[in-house]
Length: 489
Image (cartoon, rainbow, N blue to C red; front, side, top):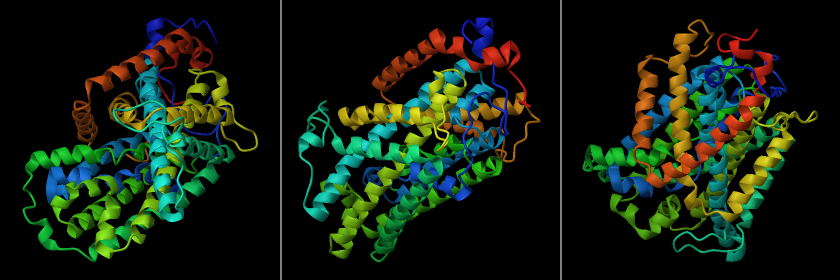
């Protein structure tokens, strides 16, 4: 496949034909074993992480009681993106998520740019949440068993401001390895374990809602709009990142039974579950505690568990909530690692990476080599880099992916109007345009250093494509210069 005769400019803009049925892709394919409910739990599992356990103390000081509205605004922003994902997932039910959608709708070069975004979104977030899991795991074992690891095995050696340092963050590394072993066993096993963990953490949040409502006082919602529109907007921007993860559903497009129906249903179902539980937590939390107490140092460090301890006078519910946070992060790490491996699988099958990334184990029907490589890289990052250096790069990658999905909807409606779409974005073209506007607005608030880091990473990925990927692209041999339109037979 090396040495493609395709003109350089044509190659950068060519699009991959859309193939929806088994056998439509060049190279290995994955086994369809995941049901709609399990797929929906993927979205919930990747979204409901520790953010909801701790976001109130960051958002309430900005918006006051109107934080409930801020949750709805953030949910609307995430929902716009989810609706766009639902249309593309129903039309293009393949592995690779945003990378694949971009390759089919916007061309090869844009696909590689988005590959850089989603590799940041999934790979870096996997490492970041694993680092967070380490701290909560130590707190939980200390509270329940009176045992915790020494600092030398709990922190990375790289300092961040005045943070504690150690030799390696061992719990974070162990978590990544455990997730890797699950993923190697098979997608259905991973989906089953994730479903169990999601049900548990939703149960823990429902417990918080029920207990918090026993101390609910309507007077705490007085002066509801006191912070004004600016306060609600600031809180919504903070809360928005608690909704990131719904796009994880689309990475499983090739392993889902009846994907054209299951994918949009799972995406929209996950959105409804997440928004509902978040709004209930916000209502219960604000109703159970005076607004000014959300700014206390104790609240800042312990989140929802402090509210429960104040209500019940016991540390037991708080400990249960901490266990829920530990399970939440495990679930998030599992799903984000899964998403990363499926994106790399799609890239390997397309020739943008060495073909070993697309090799499938004949027994488990999973990309084992790919999974092991991803786990090693993520474990190294989690073990040796503080999470503070990682989060903003996750944000820029996610928002970039959201923008491209919305653009993909607009482009495919024009270039392939007859493409089968079991789910269609309502209020087209307003919905995808609004999605782009909202994401650009959030991107505008990111720090200059974040853009600089992303620029370097983007240059590395595009440079690799120009020097290696474009010469080995599968389209060079199988489709040639004319493979830029249509649906694969």
